[in-house]
Image 1 (cartoon, rainbow, N blue to C red):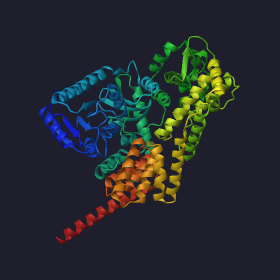
Image 2: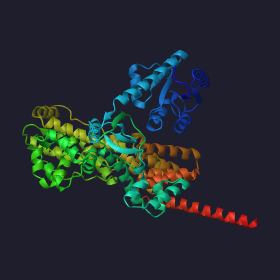
Image 3: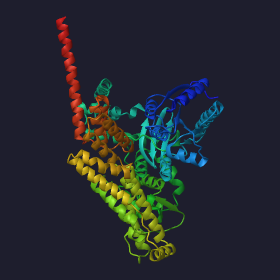
Image 4: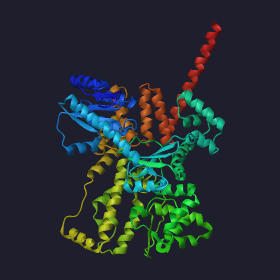
Length: 635
């Protein structure tokens, strides 16, 4: 029998089944609440604390799978136990697929008896306790597996989830998405924004204390208050938040004891401020700042007599990393003819700096070791460390290149002739691998779909190189091209979506809001997870009929979906603020404008709205003060 007192929510449009479940679960000691609609249930789950929810698969308005999928995207409900209720039999394969698609824990087949229900929930909570015990046992000691090694391991696996780090009372959670650290939470007071700015000398302790008090009174974020006080510009705040989240991660490199435990997950709520550095760049910065000579010696000593060369795998070789001139020279010299010791001996006046560099490059596998001399060709590393700022021009270039590469055969994709030789294939591939390595676009604000296109191109040109660099597979592929159908990939849908989006944007810019709805709706039908499409479609909807409540609600729903996909898009927050204003939700409106400024310090419209809100607040406060004086005089 399960533990007493667990709160359970039942979401089902069938009144009889809701009543039956409430009685059955209450008899087992659960605290049960019921609702008849998915939207109402989702709101309760996101604002209250429950340990279990049972959801009917087929419901009007929002289906059970849609509710479950939404729960898995929110940090608060990501680990909530979810049981789907269905009248249709699900095979083990179907259940496994459903768990992968939208994340339920179990299925309850109607009709069911009380004993079946109790047995299912007992297994569910028992397995949960076992999983927690197992997870605790899997925590790694940082003495044997340091933070940089953990980060690179997760990068290799393209893992998504949470890396929990603990050292004494200090706890940190690193959010990992597809192998990239994107955000960090910490329980250390010394790492809060105000204290960091005091330690940097940007503000005084008096300023910090005053901003905290004003933040408590107004409910605004401390960063916004510091802007109002004239102590920071929006650009200063944006830069400070980036430093803060990056430093929270880098400071863990000095932890020589403690534990690290990774918990895999599908996804989690994204944050406006995210880390902009690749794992390799983080590893280099962290080692430079926090690893002591003893750690460097301990890592390099077993490798001291091994020859060092640049990685053969471009996935590692062309990782985004910021090397200074000496670093670039050393990396270029690693051609398999020098040992670690010999490289260090060449730089006696920069011994520690070179130790740091070699350690970082070896941990991130940009360098490989060998027991024998294996001379390789030098590769031009220029262009690495150059971040690609995302804008409409780059966006169109990516789409044009995507169409060209993905529709081309392997020779055309690499830009070489069919009579090419091995060195020509290698040079062409390395040139493209540098240009389209996913690390280069890490800080560019790419949407999920654009990032997918970059990855697809990188994988395709890598596949082309693998085939064409081997003489036998090269010959077989050439024969297939001559005698068989040319490999083509249909990407008309991608191009049609972008064309429709651009048409809608033009109409929006000319204030033809009603006319913009159709092309923008077509764009999101073709690419439903492109946040720019969703945001502009929602704004067209709202501006076309701002007086209609149902239209406002629909636009709000689309904007919230877009924010989930990309919280770094300032227009999404700006438009949310505008709609909340119309709805009279001043606090939510103000919060959205704050988020717009965090996402883009140059969002002048959001800054103007925040100033107006603050002005109205001050005028209201003055009016109340005058009223009190008037009343006191009358008395």
